[in-house]
Image (cartoon, rainbow, N blue to C red; front, top):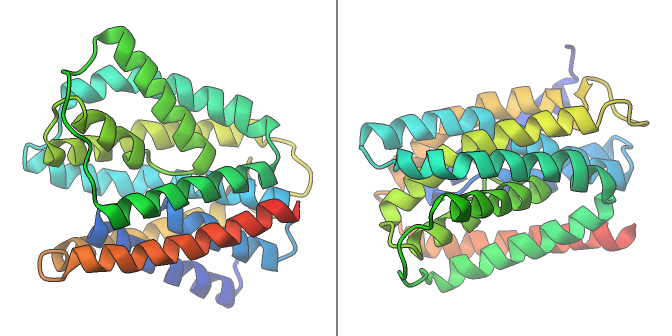
Length: 271
């Protein structure tokens, strides 16, 4: 795979920044990657509808790799609730497949851009408010976990995110400690990303206008460079989180998310 030096540089900077922010603020990189990969693809002549779909799919695929190091760190501290992971995983796979193979392939990329804009606007607002849901009942039974997992997998697949902004509030609301909810959400990122990425690769087969080095809707150059660079800076970001005013940084980052939401809203309305 031979890439232009400028493209490699753009993707490398994006990966380094995404990894650092993910480690610093404890969020997935999909909210950052989606808009910026859309910009990169659009600048290379990919139509807006297809660029949005490929950016979401590629963002999700990178989570396969970044989640592994995150899960290892949380597991070493005994924070992952593996019983919850096992309960939610089947529903997550089901919801991811329905989303990535069914709904994702049917919806226009511009419609997905509007959904993405709404999702990251909501996420940014949650970061500013900093409100955690109140604990209520215990975790539901098998049927309840299957349903919850399906919703998490479906929503994640439509916006290319790891699902933390859905799964963490769900677990906290069911009496799971926030530190365990965050760690467990990181572990859930792997099945979410794997199932959705497989669906994107399948549903995007044979789509007209795909750029070179595409596996369905997944753009392999971005996946390779971004994933390689983000794993380098994520540990640095996590380390810096202990010595920086993270609450203030979250407010600044929320402002960035609003700007990215405005861009994706513009791309959606453009179509």
